[in-house]
Length: 300
Image (cartoon, rainbow, N blue to C red; front, side, top):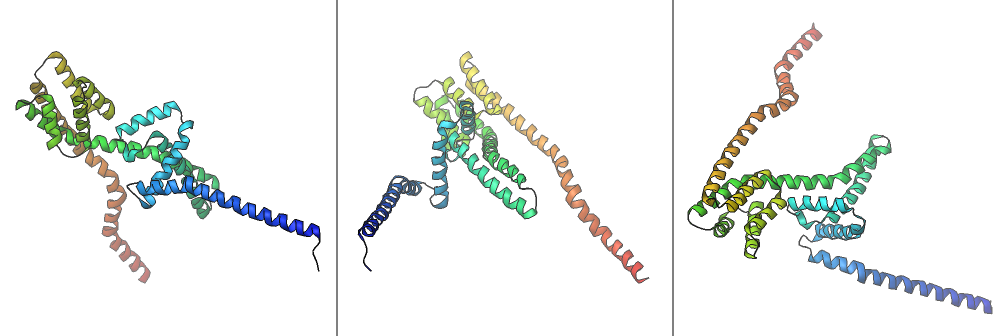
């Protein structure tokens, strides 16, 4: 059976259309690979974490850059201050935290759907999971701030004693601060003091460098100490005497804080005692008696 002219034309046009579609899809795939996927793979290889963690970090930063134009200025300013106080963990920017909130909301929603479906509850309860997932990155950042403040509070007395001894030994403030950075314990306080030292070497005044550290850390104990240094510098008071007074005061406050925590321990232990230990003790003491009474009544 021979094909007519229109059938041959239709076959040729159909074959051409299929080839054009295949070519368009191929070019689209190549373009996506070279412009998006290849860059993504290259960034993942350059990421220090590498692997799945590196891919996650790159994805969060890509999503954060997309969110940059939609951020409120007030949210960006507040989150940037919080991240600075937290020591900028993992190099996150405010838009990255917003991206983490979006990812957390999606994961929380899916997790809530699975749990609600498994328990036979209304699927609207999954909204609670989405809200929890959205707020978790903010909670994590605040937790990083608290951890960093705790590390600075613990390292501050030792660094202050070392600074006091260096000044009383005849060194000026910059040389004494350099000695603290050299001999101090590794941690966020040492990093902050090292940054202050760099700013002093770059030409900033002592007051400007110390006030910048107050803004970055925002810790009351450190603020009090730095404010005393600034006032002593303005009034021409002996720096060694001020440091000795501050060191003694900080040591007293540390002792008082330890006594306060020790006094709070019995109150904090009350609930675990009542909820966990006392029922176990009662079961061990009265369990055999109850069992003996029940066994006697059953046999009698």
